Amino acid sequence: MTADNILGLIVSAVVVVYLVVALIHPERF
Image (tube, rainbow, N blue to C red; front, side, top):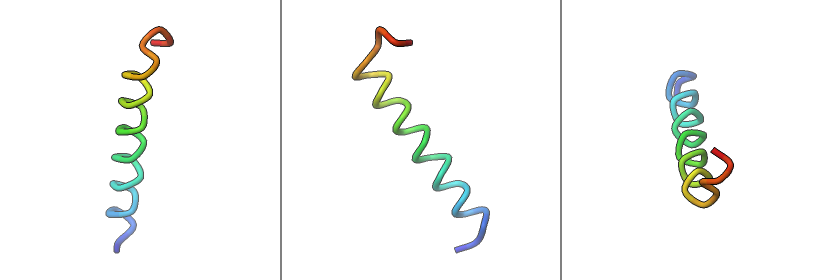
């Protein structure tokens, strides 16, 4: 695992979590 791979995984995880929260709580966005 390189630093770029780890950073990519972190960014992807954050985006997925954000999308899930936006779907569950649309009134906050």
